[in-house]
Image 1: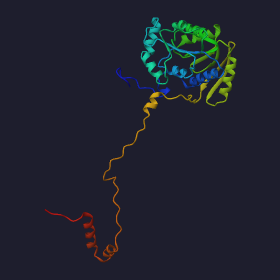
Image 2 (image 1 turned 60 degrees about the vertical axis):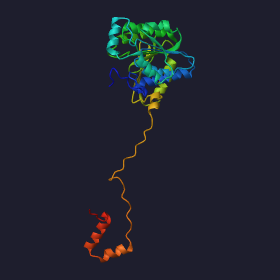
Image 3 (image 1 turned 180 degrees about the vertical axis):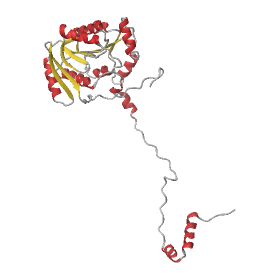
Image 4 (image 1 turned 30 degrees about the vertical axis):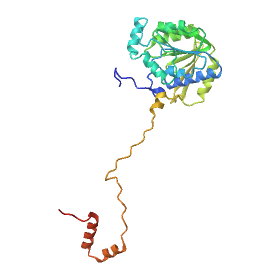
Length: 311
C-alpha cells in the first residue's frame, strides 16, 4: 500500500495498470483494430474516460503514422454539474492526470492529445468524420452518455466503430437507457456484445459480424450466442479462459530486470571439505598387525592431535 507521500509502483506490465479492461475486450479491440488496418481503413482514435490509462495504453499501440489520438477526462478537474461531481468523488477520487500520463509514458514514447475537462468538449476538439475507432467509458449519467453517443456518431468515419462501456452493469442504468435508445431510434447498429461493452457502427455491421463469427467459431475459448431483437442481430460473446493478446512490457520492466548474481556462501568449518587422507604405508600396516591394540590406538591419537606442549 502506498501513502500520500509515496509514488505508486511503476507498471511493468499492462496488467499492473489499475482499471477495468477484461481479456475478452482486449481480444476484441485487437481483432477489430487489426481488421481495420488490414483493410486500409484510416482514421484517428478517441477515448472518452481514461481512468489510469489501461485501455488507452492498449489503443495507443494501434496508432499509425499520420493518425491522431485524443483522450478526454476530467481527471482532478471540476465536474460540469452536481451529479457528475458526486460520481467523480465516489468512484474516481484517486485519478489524476499525472498518474495517467506516468502510466501511459511507461509504454509509449509520446502522450496522446489530452483534453482535460468534460466530454462536452469533444465536438469542439475532434473533427467530424475523422475517427475510425471511438471508446466511450466516461460518465454513467444518462444525459452525458446520450451526448457522448451523439459526439461519437459525428466524429466517426463511415463504418467506423464505437465501443460503449457499462451498457448492462447493474449500477449504470443511465448508460443502458442511452445505449439501447441509440440502437432503437438513433441509427446505431450493434456488431457484438461482450460482458460489459457494446460494439457498434452507424455503417453496415454485417461484413464485420460475418468475419467475427468465423473467428470466434474457430476457437474454443469464447462462448457464443446469436439472437434477434428489434430487427438487429445480437452477437453475444463470453470468455471461456481466454488469454490476453501479447503486449510488450513497459520500459520499467526492461530497466528493473537486472540479473542478480548469487553471492558465494561464506566458508565454515561445517562446509569445508576435509583434506584427503594419505593411504597407510607398508610399515604402518605391519605395525597395526603386530602391536597390541591399546598401543596402536595411542599412536593413532598422537598423530591426529600432534605433540603436546607444556609451560
